Length: 196
Image 1 (cartoon, helix red, strand yellow):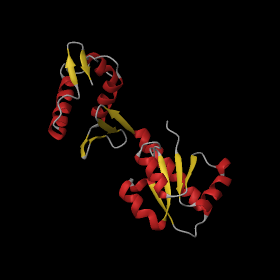
Image 2: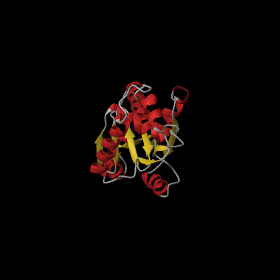
Image 3: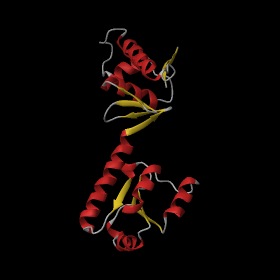
Image 4: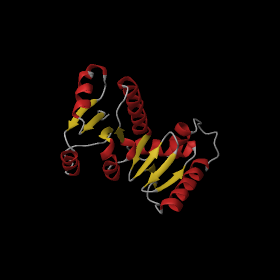
């Protein structure tokens, strides 16, 4: 898991307060004295803001919001209660950690396990629980998975299922993916079984 980071930009006094509380925080604390230095490093990719939150002065918020996802930015507007602020900051970090853990990369797609939604660019597709489980199982498998294995692992049955239940589910899932994303290459099949 990537360490969570708090970037404090153009707020030296506020950074000093936070650095005094260092033993009470469980994220990395980074300071930039001005937005230009931050944006230079961000655009050159010498810093990563993945899994990060930025605290910026109120009058610079709009500039940051044009370049960075708004859910990663906190507008600093004094006066604040530092304890209330810390509590809300910790909640934001927990929410970010939860979001990161619930998203799985499957080739060029993202699968949100919690909401059971497959996403690519601006498109999204709602999946059933079984479809989600099949995609995760196939994605985690290093070799092709045969129908018997899918029956045992996804349906927890041995041979009680009708012969074509697994094939039918995979056919429907492939069709949904093709219809929504115009992609019929995500789930592949060969003589040994199914792969991603």
